[in-house]
Amino acid sequence: MQCYSTKSRGIGGRIKQRYSDFVVEEIGLNGIAEVKRFLLENAMDKATPIVVPENDNQRENSQLLCELEKCNADENFVLRRLSRFLQLSRKRFGYAGMKDKRAITCQFITIFSPDSEKLKLFQSRTIDLRPLKWQSERIEIGMLKGNRFVITIRAIDLEEKELKKRIEDFFAEAEKGIANFFGEQRFGGVRSVTHLVGREFVNGNLKEGVMLFLTMQGEKEKPEIKIARKNLAETMDFSKASKEFPIEYRPERALIHHLCRYPNDFAGAFRKLPKQLRFLFTHAYQSYLFNRIIEERLKSGLGLKPVEGDVLIDGVPSIVLPGFESELALGKPGAIEKKVLDEESVDLASFKVKEMPEVSSKGSRKAIVLVPEKMVLLEIGKDEFNEGKLFAKISFELTKGNYATTVLAELMKNKE
Image 1 (cartoon, rainbow, N blue to C red):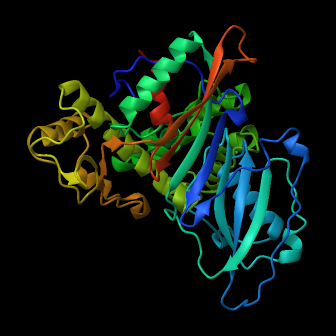
Image 2 (cartoon, helix red, strand yellow):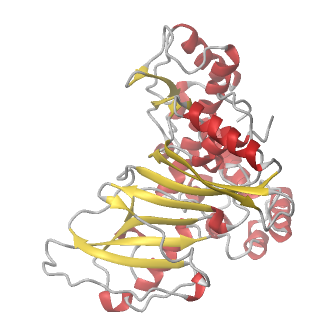
Image 3 (spheres, rainbow, N blue to C red):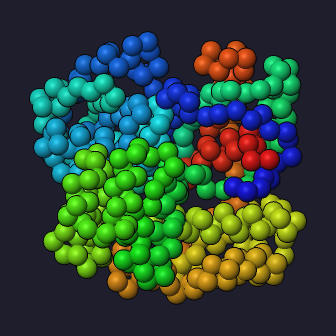
């Protein structure tokens, strides 16, 4: 985000200084997955005993519905650990959406026909699994209403009265809607590489995309992975890279191991990633283009209200998520969409990737207005982790597909 859709004065500050500063609770189709363990004192040492309910009708009820609570844990890592412990394929696990890593999160998952006795033995300092009931339906991506967030913003350099006023001013403005930018996690977190890889794939540059994924360094990455990425970029020595990349970088290592055997099979290497992860790269590039179009719209003065030429979704203007079947808006909105695509030198037909059909996209549209719900200022106080500064704890809910970091960016306005 390079511009803002709200006029309220920013509060500054910092998010995610501590894991407990960012709490995410999934609002499922039939309830809320509430955080229960990792906000407690000494929570890492207080594992909840796993009690598996009786399954009265095994033929009909093959899916075990659970609450999955995790603390500072990547979702792919968590599911991989569970699948290995239970000796089950990853395909047996169903979930509605990915959750933040540097956070405390809770969501619903289903496990197809797990061994109950083995499940009871599972323990972890960062994962809490709470079986709820047996059911016939598997949870699939998108089967949620949204998420509830409780977020602590730290290191705020304002007086308490002024801080309270700015937050209240923002809430009043946000109730009318803010620009629905995709959040930073859509672009790969620490490295912000995902959309760049997606751009290469859409342009038919598979080798360049894979090598970018493997070699682009993140500013905050550890020195050993930076060195490994630099060496691979300079030498293209996959055998050496297989020894240098730390074991926790499993996605990169999977690609590298394939390229050790088949040095020119970049499409095959990329297919070593899970299918759901592969498609994220195209999504990320579409999201990047979407964000650029919103920025151009705001800078041009069109704003968020409907104008002639807009394609409306439930009465709200939308922007194209480009694909090979996409049609642009008309009038000034369409001209802005075309301007960004031209500047990126991207053709809509390019989103049909012949060498890797699974990352192709027909395209869609997304509403440009986000309305946070149930916004509450919970607490303001002295920040014990940043001397002389304040913290503010807030809560709000978002419907699925929307990002808390988008709301926080508008509230904090750290790029002004």
